[in-house]
Amino acid sequence: MSKQEVKVDWLENMAFEADISGHKVIIDAAEAVGGEDRGPRPKPLMLTALAGCTGMDVVSILKKMRVKLDGFNVAVEGDLTEEHPKQFSKMHVVYEFKGKDLPLEKLQKAVSLSEERYCGVSALYKKAIELTSEIKIKEA
Amino acid sequence: MSKQEVKVDWLENMAFEADISGHKVIIDAAEAVGGEDRGPRPKPLMLTALAGCTGMDVVSILKKMRVKLDGFNVAVEGDLTEEHPKQFSKMHVVYEFKGKDLPLEKLQKAVSLSEERYCGVSALYKKAIELTSEIKIKEA
Image (spheres, rainbow over the protein chains, first blue to last red):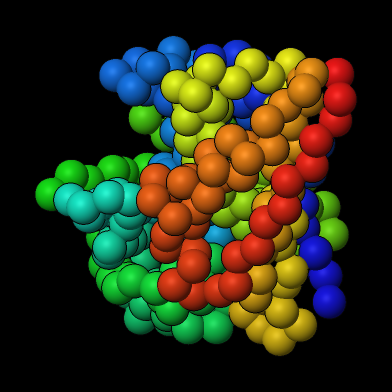
């Protein structure tokens, strides 16, 4: 079994420095709750993990399919519960592809392979909440 | 209902630039899987979200309890499944406090308030996997 570890060191106030496999990232709370906004908040990092995981899957699958992209981004929107602890109750992923005459079927195939078979972040989230997605295409 | 959104923009190869409430973070894959290690990998960001969330809870609860810390860090270790998609099957959180004559009962109380009542990241993860924790104290 393989393991991954991350450590966050308290700096001051609400700020921490995370050591993520050697990469240092400051995380902090918003000013409204006593932080100084020196870095991202923790909960959006959950959305970032999902966007990055499925984004990497999709670019590498499309590369194997020889689909050339002029641009690509992934946006993840999470709905938070009203009650405490405030937590995501649903996430929606928007894949936006830019390119000329992009083959929709291959894009759909790449997205569904990531969602169903490759992305370990969505695999975990799906056990707890609803995940939905859509594809947008911008002609380059 | 409140919403949070994060977008990641594809840069090249496996690298993406995340925009997390205005904070830019590069995420990338390891060299072994075709990336260039320009930033953290997605899955460890899940651990970072948990460490930061519960870490911020604990420092703010202990501040209200007038417990003075000389140092504090949170390490989160995740066990990955062997089968694909490789995903966390368990996470273990180690809270390490540094200080003089720290009151163990208050530290335990702060940790359990975060775990049971405040931290929205662990609330979601607990629905999918097992979460465990321990407290370590280093005399300053």
